Amino acid sequence: MKYLLCFLLLAVVSFDLTARTIHTERSIYRNITIDEYNQKRCMRFETRRRSISNQACMKLNDKDKLIFEYTQSIMAGLAFNPSPKKILIIGLGGGTLPMTFAKLLPETEVVSVEIDPAVAKLAKKYFYYAETDKIKTSIKDGRVFIKRAVKQKQSFDWIILDAFNGDYIPEHLLTVEFLRETKALLATGGLLSANTFNGSKLYDYESVTYQKVFNELQILSSTSKGNRIIFACNCDNLGDRFKLNLPIKAALQPLGVDLDSLVKRLSGEIDWDTSVPPLTDQFSPANLLNQK
Amino acid sequence: MCFELLGGRLLAPYFGSSVYVWGSIITVFMLALSIGYLSGGKLSLFRPNLQKYGFIFIVSAFSLMPMIFFSEAIMDWVFERVEDPRYGSLLASSLLFLVPTAVMGMIAPYSVRILTESKDSSGHTAGFLYFVSTLGSAIGTIVTSFYLVLWLEIDQILWLIFLLMLVAGSAALLVNYVRSIQSASGENFAKPLN
Image 1 (cartoon, each protein chain N blue to C red):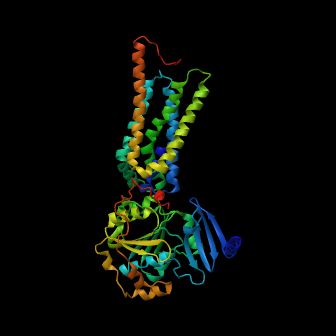
Image 2: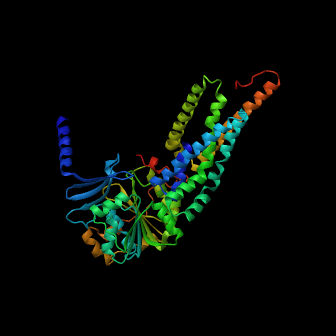
Image 3: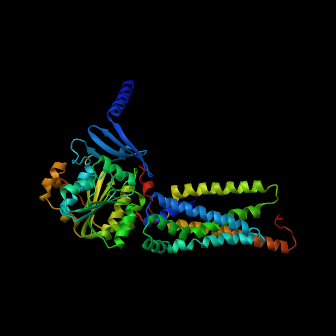
């Protein structure tokens, strides 16, 4: 036991020696740190739950590579539509997704919505996030952006929901009403991708909420950790619309993404309890349910 | 407090959960309470009695009605007209929360007047009322945020507050009625008001 403790202590100490905090930023919402370890640079939100606080990571010697499995999984959306004209991302993080799209699809307009100006600042400073006339950032609450964009009759071919507050998805971005607004902002045949977690009481409620708005869902569960990407569309027969052997496959290879194998892992299976009520603006105890 | 927490929930779909949304809500609640305290104190100068006291509760109960029935229409209206989410949320929270909170704020000073028996004990009475109302706020906050949102919809919680206020107001009116009958029948149970 003693040896085990010593070993653990040593492990912790040695980890700390290699991990280096190169910047700490106090934003109005939280403390954000930029750490470097194992040739990686990561953005973290300081919360109680260390395990899920990494918001973005980048390999220092290969900054284009997608490190997180979930960002790779989101790319499966390119098998649904390999040339979206307009993409909306709710939750900027390190700007990994918009920068990836900027390289893959130079003609595509990518709008990222981020609530915290400090996050956008750090993304530019430490993660090579750069705005152009195609890559745009809006500092707003995601729900407010979407509501306003619907009123202005805008539309997007692909909407990616990736907003996290350190604990989980903010409650008002996880309700039937919000998803209806999001669906209204999708072009006909447009795709929605949402980054979510499994393994809490919320799983059933969240799944039922998405199902209520979009009927058919395709789920891409991660192989290692508890992420899952929910795909849904403003169309019918979602499952048949993901195609294999697309030309874009080759461009994704260097990023560490095997598009065909992602598509093969998509599943339309309903493995949640469909008897629970969906979350609404009136009833959304999402964060309470999220406790394990 | 229960009401304030729900305020955040109500505004989130329209104005998000940015820090200024909470700023707006807290500003409007504080403003409303200060108006309520002042006018409640003024009102207590004119023939204070249980009947009026009960009416304050009942009026505050009914002032929740716009929140229950028209909150979406009101927020939609504001959202259409005010681009800036700071002033949007400030305007929406004023329209929704100012009146009910101000009326609820009138209760505290009026209670002091009703309960005070003499000048000497007035500090004690006021202290006790602060104790009850602040403890009530603490309980309202924890019960709402920990449990009520898990069990009930927002509108149902508002109806619950409505009912509580209505019951409290009716109880005051009932006590007042019973006392007036008793004093009419000769037994002098008049309240120890100066």
